[in-house]
Image (tube, rainbow, N blue to C red; front, side, top):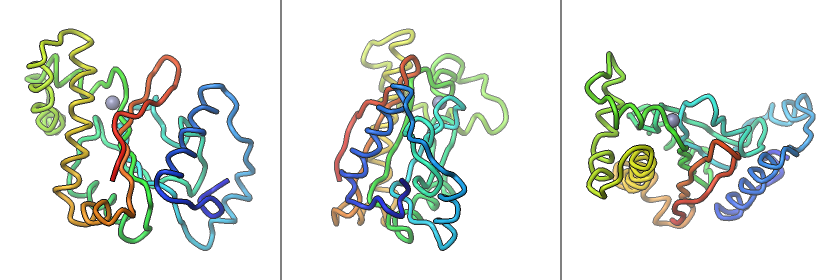
Length: 204
Ligand SMILES: [Zn+2]
């Protein structure tokens, strides 16, 4: 199934994506005829969700949510740090493609967050810009007294929750869509060992 036949509001789309994740966890993805899907999409795209996801090669959204061509409008950056082009891309999905769901998908053992926690001074080149954006969340997580791997996971979740607030306030387009109830925002985390995705927060 692709967005061309699925439809539904943001909550319904999220339920469908979670069902896809359960299929992925169980190793029973839907069989799809990709040439058929490709032909169906020739007239245009109508993705069911916009996704901001880490660039980590282990967390490919279409695979871990068992979706196909045309289903997800995806922006990926290391650690989910957001810059103007990425934000503009999400706004395009909300304003022009009218996606009913915006998913922020972080994950366990994120290399970007790990670097920001363990070696913030060693970030070379433009990697420093990633660490800089993660730093406030790392600092807040440190204040909770967590250490080691727990600190990395706490910083990841702190950053993801902050990101949800930032999106609402930095983007008038996204803020308005949330206020009008035509966009559902979900923050979720992917677990590496079993492939499960858990919801950290959901709302509009
Ligand atoms: Zn990552």
